[in-house]
Image (tube, rainbow, N blue to C red; front, side, top):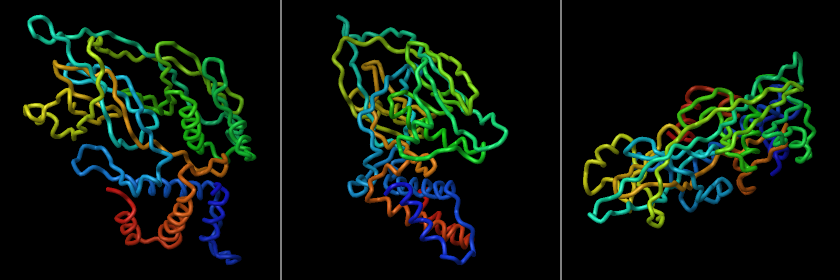
Length: 359
């Protein structure tokens, strides 16, 4: 289904023809409901692991519904967090972790049979901070013109974006609707290969800001909204890496573990972290991997469910889940509308939470 077809389906199912009893839903309201139920469909297809580790699993029956969102083998460098463990930043489009593994190197051994301790090197990555402020216009429509430049090159233009989707775009009626653009820009730059994050990068927090990891080379950028330029700022992020051992690299599956039992496991010889089965932990937008003197972690690989592109009639963004499931999203949207908006009561909402919301 195209996004317009999904809107027609929802409107046909929620309105009484010529009854004039309820107002028509705005396009933005239909988009909001469709996105809410798209997310519910995704969450219904991933199941939290029963071991409390924080990871998820997908049954073979369910994986087809979200196959477009499954990212496999995404490799991210590992850095020193503290003497016990390394850290790897979760990707900017990360939503649910399915599995993780470590690329390790075993310790070199000296003539006396002792493990050689590696030295560490401090690396610095350059961050480009691009703000997403409200439109400077006094009256609407707002955000009719939005461009993003990085290193002097145009990487996003709202008019080019919508024209490529055969959509006539004039902007939004409210300044507060800038969040529609946030989702759009984030997804487009991520698809273009930029390592982009929103507000959080590791333990750092930059409110209402895109964070672009440029690596070792510094860069410049700006956001132009309705004719006014907002320049980006530069920041640096220092990380330590361990010098590589001479041993060949090995891929080892991690044991993703809940934070509340990791310290106990580390004290038990049979369960503690080993080169063949490193212990890992999800916390604060990072994956931590515990090491010991016999090996180091040089990178982590992730298989995860990424964030879905938002459905938007105004921007011409279709649902990216497989077409076979578009009707289900529309049906869930109509069901939610009739239960929560047309005739709401607390009992219906309670039942809806128990049925549809994973807790």
